[in-house]
Length: 527
Image (cartoon, rainbow, N blue to C red):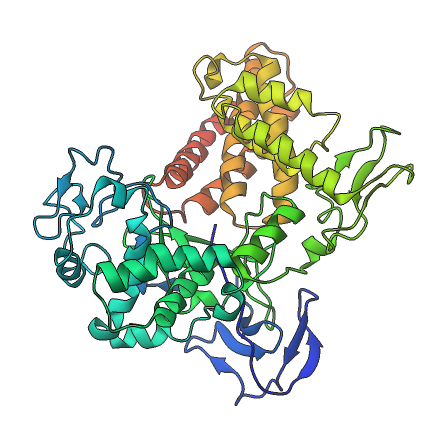
């Protein structure tokens, strides 16, 4: 998921208006002088006192259109990362035996690392600074979180080595006034980043506040990127202007060169806000808003957060233990302290803190469950089926894992599954798509993967019936049409994913499966 930001506030007086997501936006007059259009006129930058600078479509943008294809300003290790190579970011499993840079003695995958002495890897300038310091110990690299200071250092190096990128960086928001009040964040950055850069690494030309600002740029605006199991973070020059919404109208992925591609997940109409989600869309409202408040410094009031049913998905709903027919939802979803009430009997009311503790306990139990165990996940779902709505986000997390385990896990290979288990996989995928169609509509990775997963059980179920002569030709054609529809959309969505990624391989498999579907026309005619 992207790690977004709260937008800047402008200082000008403004009029009040409402944007396409029904969020209050204080905007200046929409004159050409106030708006900045891009060369290709896909979007324009507008300014609001409520959300700062943001992007709206300057013309209709068709589904799958690439809105951004951006080079990174800076790339590097995520906060609190495990030891990794400073050049290519591969994991370092044993710091005692790992290769060290010949000059600065920081861990590398090897002295022939492809990221050595490159802009977005272990640069010469970075190596020069680190080589003047004492060789980092294992404690430095783990307990003392030395990796946390690497990306801030790379940002600071832009000032002398790439002034143009440094100037772009200065347009980002750091929210220092807010972050100073969050003692844990500020003091942690002071200890592990500011003091390390200024005192240990002797980079003294920057003040404490300047380094804290860089920390803020990263905390508020960085995206999580990386391929082949690598998890790092990066800053981009324009994507940070895209506003947040818990039902985003864009999707994004990055490639092996750390370029970020943002596409229209569905058609975006002229004048519509361009959005992505800074929170995990698979989380419920309380959890999303808690993350956005703590990490991005704003309270989300989007349509999904404002609706106690989360647009009919019931991803935060519980089952009523009193009447057993209604769902228990927040009476005021934008108020974290509001009571929860049954929609049917209206007599069962629960204080918010009880809900918090209950969900925390259940989430902890899921976290301790082996996510590669079909038996444990099914037992978990059975245990809480009377407590949580079937589409509660905790249940959805377990079901999403099951949707991919059925057909792949040892003992559950797709062609060996019984008809009951094939139907189980199919029904789980249908339930997931019912949710994903609402929270990530259009070209989203979640929908693409699930559409690929659902085609196999449907195909095998009707093939077995066909071979047993227990299905009518009309039914066969209907089933084939359904499979083709799923495969076509999975192919379209997943072939946009990064080359050789798991999702892209799945997309290619969907394309190949579509070709094989033509063989059925020879058997039953066109469908």
